[in-house]
Image 1 (cartoon, rainbow, N blue to C red):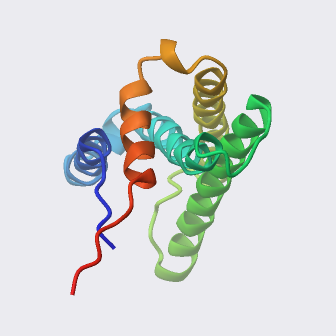
Image 2 (cartoon, rainbow, N blue to C red; image 1 turned 180 degrees about the vertical axis):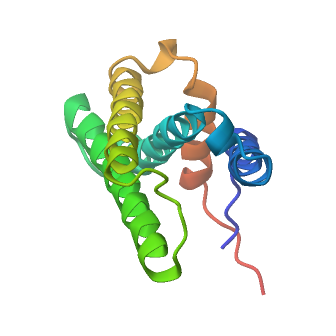
Amino acid sequence: MQIRLPIELTLFTSVFLFASFSLGEVRDFYDRFWWWDLVLHGSSAIVVGLIGFLSIYVFYMTYRIRVAPFYVALITFGFAITVGTLWEMFEFLMDWFFGLNMQRSGILDTMTDLMVNAAGALTAATIGFYFVRNEERLPFRRLIRSIAERRRQPQKKTG
């Protein structure tokens, strides 16, 4: 498929996985620091939201869709909320079927994670909204432009 991910996304994913598994699980950061889970949920919600934004922005930038910036932000928010909610459902199912403790303190953990997810989704939606409204002034311009430009270039056929 010849999909090339931006180095920023690859770096964030690597750091996130290290923080989650190596520090969180192996080094017990989830139990040692009450805020560890919240930081990971918040940062992942922002990144997932930005991935959702990039997905819709490619269509927006290539004029395949024309909508107000508010609707781009709404789609971004909805995407991040959906993924975060699916993750919480995954945690519940893993606890239910395999006796794990992914939800730590049950409903309190789940609801806190969902609220942090909503805050991260809102952050990503706000970034997306202002980017669409004022593309040239935001710090994420290079990242988003590079991804969108790669999508516009015709792919070489191999074989």
